[in-house]
Image (cartoon, rainbow over all chains, first blue to last red; front, top):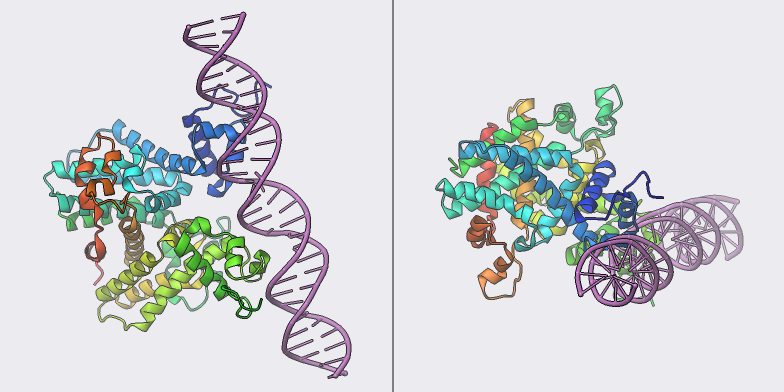
Length: 223
Length: 223
DNA sequence: TTCGTGGATATACGGTGTATATGCACGGCG
DNA sequence: CGCCGTGCATATACACCGTATATCCACGAA
């Protein structure tokens, strides 16, 4: 059986393992990811994965690493913007873009951020603070402000991504908007929410993201 | 054995189940939560839990519900602030406070926010948007702005909580700051991060939270 | 050609979520 | 008082999970 629908092309690789894991998670969600299932997708036995990742946690770490790698690849391909502010927009929009391509991985970055100490995070993840802090300090922002601005930046990107990607539609196929949102399920004692839910159905998009980002960068006096 | 170190006091209750789950997760993290372990903590067999929660997912939903219940309880106990802006500060600080009391539950709210459609979320969770949207619309903010402001508010609260609670210390017991941060692990090609990591070791605290919140609310012209 | 090495497999163990069937204590009614 | 039905707790069982361990085998170097 040298050819199958899956794999069969040569040896296993950390990259192939993580790529398959990302495809699986994107397609079926985090719960679908098990070592056995992942191995099956690669046409291999479960234990073979342990030569390329030291545990399932390692695979999950690899997933968040991958989305940061992708973000940096996109950023490196494009040319840097001319002003600090424009470059922060470019970085933020890229991160938001990558995040919305892999929404199921987003909770994972929250989890790992809270669990893994800074110095132990993958290199691709650490490139982000280094990139932003470099941008700021080279522009003459002092240490304390730079750190504050970076925290505001990363907090806003993460929070906005989650809020913008949050599930709001209940029955996507129903023609009636109120039913599509599932408003009939809403208890009557949420009058304001009920009234504004249709307005919430459409996300804020990039416009609101940039608006908030600018407000924050102004507050931290980023040039 | 009518008395043990655990439970034995009467029948099971959804409240008792969730309370025990929250204590377990706070003490030992999300990975420690299994139906069997939770049941054991309550002095009961695993399947007994299924009379009070329809699945493990239901228990997890209950956990995020609990932290919202706690936030609303605190808000209802205190008296509302006199201005919209001050009330938003009060709500935001309360949420941040509750989140940092239960850091292990935080990734869960990210997950559920992304997975559960708005109308299916627990009542306690929906009280938050209703509360904030009510506050804004009663103050005369129009629909679109109110929704935008709410999204900015919730995104900032969530993102800031994650960033502020993120793990940064590597070896808490080491006297040497650089080692405590694990800087020796940092690859040398992150010069900016390396230089500013000590500054990052202390969180932004409530001050930076309020600063960002005000900047955002200004941008959405909240009075 | 032989041998060592490193990746893939085979097997096994304890733990997990939960469907199903059984046991049982309690409150309402004769 | 005695009966029974109802609903909660238990017991058992199954498929699946992560992974430790031992085995096997194909390959490149000597």
